[in-house]
Length: 272
Picture 1 (tube, rainbow, N blue to C red):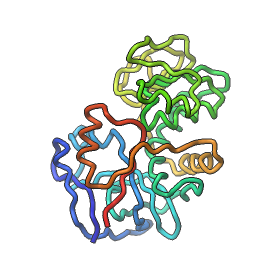
Picture 2 (cartoon, rainbow, N blue to C red; picture 1 turned 120 degrees about the horizontal axis):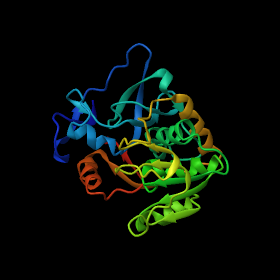
Picture 3 (tube, rainbow, N blue to C red; picture 1 turned 90 degrees about the horizontal axis):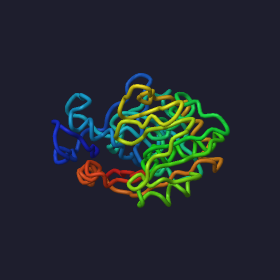
């Protein structure tokens, strides 16, 4: 048996329950992974509230860091549990340069940032990139990947996130609570839960669609995930963890997220 954070209905954070359930059995082409940690992603709020339909009972979590025959990470459903099953071809060797639990921050946020920077925005050396909402989990990776691509990065962040964003390599940090967003950008990456500002030649948004912007939902791509792991192990991308909690803290984390109190990446460890 194992513990799992599940919802049996849509609703407020209080609908999240910690259930004791059987350890899942892997099917053909699947691997059982003992979960070291998952991480919180804002999209989990949408699943809980019914904006994205799920089948009940639904186990939360999409980021997997754990062990099979070796330490691995993956993007897979049901990660907020002691164990989960993952398609074998979705598994990627975990980075060696950081603790395994911290690697849980990479899959969803890292893949979203990778695909925003390299596939949809096609950031090139010397370009000016405005990253709106750089203080979140996706922003942590987007700032570093845009710098890795050779861009000048202007990042928006609240005062509580400004120092962290600057430490990740942003060339300029704009306090969006007090200052207007700068125009004249080559690329705008909108990571904030608001309509994207059309202040660049190429505008990419992961939240609100808008005319003149490319909206996308990140896909699971183990090849991209492996490239991210390589950058982490090479010391070119940092993984900063702002908080560590257990499954029992998930209702509070969801409530804080809805109040706009979450910054950076939060990892969630299971219960024995």
